[in-house]
Length: 372
Image (cartoon, rainbow, N blue to C red; front, side):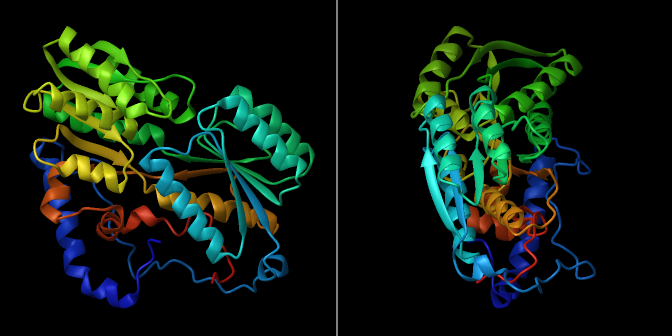
């Protein structure tokens, strides 16, 4: 989905350089130090190219007989839709049958789907999000049945599974770095958080440390809900919090559905000139919200969701093939600013990954045989 031909690479070279410079300038214009670790990564140098797959295609993949069960907690929302699109594209490239189920926010349903995948003897299982206490018993059954398993953004509770995560601490650090620069390290902040989700819990650890390190930042309200209409629910909560605390300068919303809901609330209350939003994650729809006129969502730290879906499928495929896979895979994020998006004319994730080729991370869980 995000691979480019050599011709497109050369045509867009000037644009890539300009986009990176503009995004870096945007960070500086908001007070972010030029040497901050949240600056976009440079394209891979010609002296260290990504290795080209050269191994023979394993027989079971060549025959199209590999079945990978993707057991999801949630499927609604732009992030999850693009994550699935990436997973499906990689499965097609590897000639894998991807069997998708979703708990639709119901943890018991997700656990049942996971148990069914074990019973159906899938060649490998990917668990996408979830609550540890509800998925770990079924994960243990998968391990006992010798079914290879990859867990994304949920603690599998066993070293036998591959734990795939975004660098959630760095995601929070990058977004909060922008918030601190813009507020001068002081002011009232509304925080959006729901406990029990591994990525949000890790981001919360960084938020708690950030408050200790920056006593001028005052959390005046905590809101948050995760369901099939998260953005709308958060919008209602955010409006109530902002009306109760008229001095709020910023909202830290470290999940894109949270940020979209907060943005809706700020706009409806006419506070876009006063309240800024600092989020996490990115999708084409998120970019649309960030770049629309008078949007209060000024920065987000993210990985490319489609790329993470691709990595999950590659890791599962490697396990099926008996290849060595790091049991802890981490995908690094990049800081994306509103000004940088506007200046570079970026309207979708595919353009974003062209400007930030490091977001594609082809070296993470690289498959050593050629894909179709």
